[in-house]
Image (cartoon, rainbow, N blue to C red):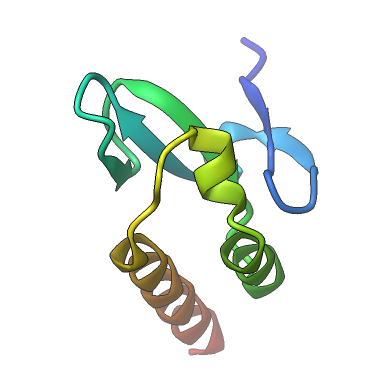
Amino acid sequence: MEPNYRCCISCRRIAPKAQFWRVVRLYPTRIAQLDTGMGRSAYLCPTADCLRIAQKKNRLGKALRASVPDYIYDQLWARLDSSQSKSAN
């Protein structure tokens, strides 16, 4: 079976959705959260450049059509730090 492909909101790279972070605007509450839930989704490459661009230009907010709280970005930066520390070991 062919995997589902998605596009990064920062760099526009197309790849299987398993290679991206998923941010979801939940329905009907319009609250943004990571990874799970039903609602509008945006996908982001797990790289510092894409995360920096998404935060600076509010790409997640525009893609989700909702405000994205700062703690979402904090969680994504923490994920990036932990994934880089795992790859360094």
